[in-house]
Length: 413
Image 1 (cartoon, rainbow, N blue to C red):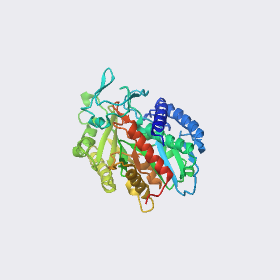
Image 2: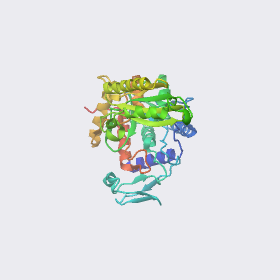
Image 3: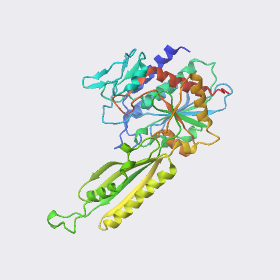
Image 4: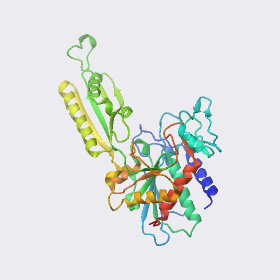
């Protein structure tokens, strides 16, 4: 295995895919929410064809699916899911990466007004001497999740180039709109994705291994007040903004994102849109514990009833919808081998596992609710969703090695 050639192929695929802008748009309710994701999907379908995959398809939602028949006597059917979209955090949708060769440990001027400082990003000092891909300061890097796509494509390329290597039957799904509510994974054609279990490659630094995520729900509080001219407002005006103020005041400030960590859940007020008559308030509810998750939702219903009783002239309603579930809740004796294999491979490759409860979700959080246990492992990148995002090529290479070993489906015990 020529490490230099593989690293070059990983970087080639990564740079090709980040060159296609594919930010998702949460204001567009269609799937996919942006044309760029369709363009990326078409490019991937063409590349998959070159790698001799079969049953390649792009459905009306932009989901790209393909299958690589098994080689040898392997019996497992394994899946990989990666998302096409990059996140919109108010930065440019065009990505212009820069590769710093043999990083020297100094601060980097990403652009005139953006400095990547080692004081703010001390973890980069672990990669002195490595080649690292940075942004130009104007955008995210897109390693979330195009490093995963490059990883998967390079592993498929390697198997094509090495026909003597046996491997499992492999199913691929590249999905849109993960960043805006895991919309794309819901559009997979599961008749074409009949796997024993699957993987996402959608977390950060070297060694991260995740099979525990949040349970997640979104809530919308709608308030219709009573308008009145200020000169005759007393006893008549019902201000929806002040009602929302009372609602928010009943939330526990200690259980909000800025005050929680690790396995502590939260309720987050994410948006308020109002005029003198109507108000809409958006909420995110998150918790690793199913019991505490349900209790948080129950509390929101309870305080809504209290507010209704307090403001009887107003029309007040809350709607809460589950978005995804904790991957860990779907792990059982039959599928926990997916995690055991990851542990075995990490050990063989000398990678120290960093098992963390993810304060978020992946496409696997949805897939696990429909019977496909889907743990998650590292891309190697740092600072997702930031213009300070960076990707050490050595870490990307090690992530590739994990993917390749999983695809080989070898017994190590």
